[in-house]
Image (cartoon, rainbow, N blue to C red; front, side):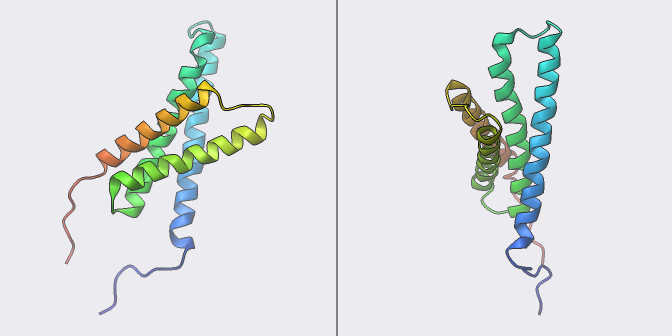
Length: 134
């Protein structure tokens, strides 16, 4: 008997994960745009922009972790955290390339904690028991 899902090579899982990370970056950009709009309108104090960056990182990591759990379907907690850390790594590299003199200070520490919490929540929410198909 042939299996229903054949392995199509290493590209079969990396492309959806790359798309999920790209969508997570767009979601983070939308959250940051809303926070910047609120800050320029006077509704959000300038001192809270580090918190807004952490919230944007949490939203992106939650989405990336959720997609990783849905794609991998085994060891949900580990795959959720791995998806969130992959998202943070891409975000960190892009931030280092775009902002040449940016140094990882307290804002990066808050963002990595937010990414880990987002991945942890995605892993916990995705770890439901599934019935095996026969």
